[in-house]
Length: 484
Image (cartoon, rainbow, N blue to C red; front, side, top):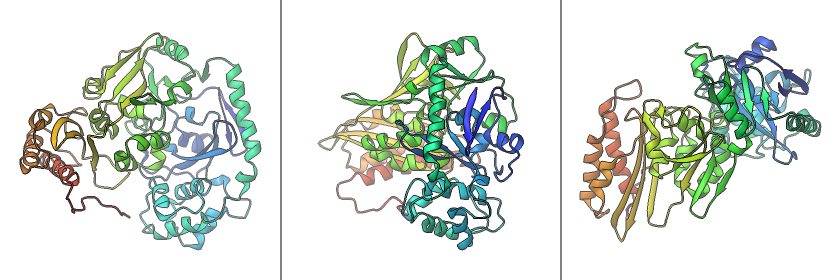
């Protein structure tokens, strides 16, 4: 059973297709058509809705935008689903709707419901956001008409005030209903979901679900897997969702490392990642868009083994380990050994990724991450490069690097390490040698994002950029600090 709220209406679903998306449910089952399908890939934001979920102690609600076109029904369990039809109160528009009217922020109107929902989530999340906050909140919404300025102005204006609407006034009752669902789940056993959409809650029930359904695929955020049926039009009979496995959502530290549960959304682990690895800020900010980061998980980004995944190059450069489990025993796989072929990993058929362990940096390490894409955010890498260089008294002691977009898998580069260890980092010979190695280290392909020659040239230039940025006397600005 999947239990949730649609606005203030309690809903229970006993049986749905495993591959039913939230957008299909809203439009075809609930017959509400304000939420649109534009791209069916989580790129345009026309389908944006909001999920409100209780915090850990049920004292407040967290409002989270998601792309309903790629969100599965397992994601709404024990949450409140809000779409654009719920915002107005009779003839009275919601404050975010009125703000968009007042600032002339809508023209053709197709994208407007999605923008409204992103504005609504920010309205309930951040009082008095600055322009950068607004840009990130709207990063998943595209508009062909307005040029964005009036939409940004409307968002800034409405979010100057403290949230005051029917949703705020109904917070207590909403929390009470959602808490009752969670309590009922706890008393009902170790499995939830439906016949085709299985939602285990602990490692033992997950292991059993995999054993009983050997052909079933594992899914958490579904931001990549959903394209299988929204764009490739394939059907999936059974899915095992990890989205309600609390033990896969724990973040802990040891004396030497950060351990991140595999089912944590990227948005939720960002504070911990940036606390210990602030150099990853740009890479994480440019990880798709906010609605995608609200769903996509670190474990999923690793498990799909895409050669253009954003986080694997960083994990390779940081010498991370993939902690896997089969319900009986756990083991650790160095990330450098995890990707064994195009979209293939070292996972056994009965295993899943439980967590990712990332060693802390020491004071001699220099870390930087670069993503090259046609758009600043909400775009796939043409090239991704992460450098982690250990320098002691000016001499390179260790070179760890991870690259995306240049091979069939996310890849390291032993040749770069072998060439540079022992060299004076500040010397011109060092930068020239690194560029030469990277120009010849990979045989990338030509595709719609970039030619092979472009990729090779960019790799070499990114090493030069890293070298410049880490010279003690550099005065060259190499990063764009403002956009949009």
